[in-house]
Length: 166
Image (cartoon, rainbow, N blue to C red):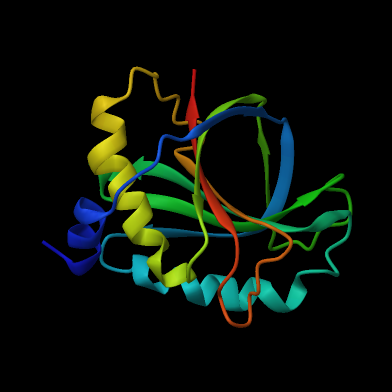
């Protein structure tokens, strides 16, 4: 068992807040990952970060990390480091846009370092998902929401993990 899995198994989860959000149009940089290179996701944020705040059509100063699972029998996933945008007309050519539909989410807050977010995600999948009566929709698989007070330089601040549900 990895350290993150061990931390996730031990973390106490509060009951999530159930909220309907969306639709939300986001855009940013997307990469394909697998279990062997998922630790490279911070590199994607380092590439996206300098553009943040000057992206054409950017709405506010909150960010999204969106995971869409799974490809190739469950070993690969797409991850999008993004911000909300009002339209996609003037986005850079290397950007991917995604319209997240209006839907309900189970929202789990996280106020610690971004490096501990994996422990929260593991705890959600290990503890909450097997026991919930909510049906997961997996569209997308889950969303990381970084509030406007999140400090990307120091990688601390308020974050949330949104799990799409019916």
